[in-house]
Length: 556
Image: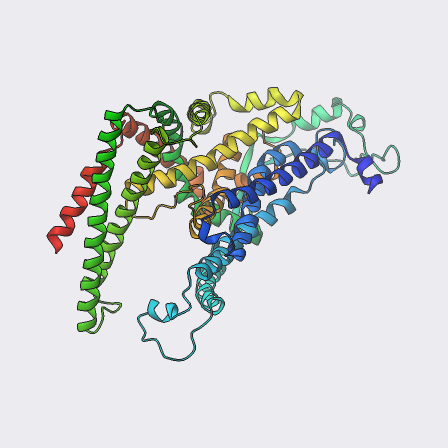
């Protein structure tokens, strides 16, 4: 109401206004991304998965912007309790973060699995064939029933894991310094009354007088005595730590790869941008692409024939079964070949797109796009380098050598929008690195499927995969930022949760106090840099196709 608004300070109003603006812009952006990237087959279909993706993007944005807002809010400053509220915001960030903590697992383990099962369910007998059972001839199950059944199994497993971990691992031991002071006289009292009947003021806390200095000198031991306070961590905070710990395994790999690969690929995209070709160049490249297309068609036919032969062989032998090691090995090899084949197809499609853009018949190519990519590449390079410097001089050394980016954000606080913008930029950049790293990792290694986001060609299953990746990396990114910017965000609520409550849980303490994940993140980033320097150009895709063909030929 108006009376509440009038009692808010400028920082609180600023935080609320920024939050509202970000949510409005994010809603428009999320809707536009879904429409821009969706496949024509999904144009008037898959409304529920689209709703899940849209709201999931809002959850991701809420988590991303939470750290800059929390740092500005300074809700954990001691004076916020009433005697020094000049630097404090008015938002309850503990409630804010708990909403994020619960939304992320709900999306990861309920809504995204249900939407994926529903989207990919076949109205026939998908559920029966998944477990090797023989479908009956009665009425097929609906897509909703199939999705509910599959999601129920996932949810039961997740609930059991969450319940057992909280039961046995939720105790924390927070270190504190114990000081023993002089014994006070029985009649020693100090009373302070509110100046206006309701509030205390900083002026009431007068400087130390002679008595105070004497009592302070009697404190023993002078440097304090280290003790620990055992506490039971709240259920929401604990699960946030568990999700952050799990997410670190993904973020350390994908974020480390993306931190090096994102600026390099953007800059190389400008260097290798489509250029106008003369007729001879056009004919030569067209012939090369046609040869690669024919090779891919041959590989697809060979893989299809091999699958039919294996299915016939399995049918004649009574099926593979769960404990048939040979059948399991063959299925795993087939999955790897399919992933490698899909990666080769994607690279071929990218080359065909560039060839079309550079040909004389192309009229849709925008020549400004490579220059925008170059600008984004230079900006990404600056962000990646400064992130590495921040890790080397602030995160790893104890004590830190220099606050670096913390000092930058503090110096920009004269106009809050500047510091919030740069803090949001550095936080959001890590999300972009995680997405790029997952895609880059999927192209080079066949242990996971690739789910590229291509305008007008992206199915909802790929959108939900990428959404899940963003959400599972959200909390480790927020925790990493709380560590890297702990000086600037020293009074943030998220720092209180992660760097005090969760960090001293014995199970998490080994990983976080020893910077295990940060060392892994840094090592992968540096190894990726070396890899990109040594292997500057993408390998010959025709050779990759020929290797795949040779393996198939040996098996046939």
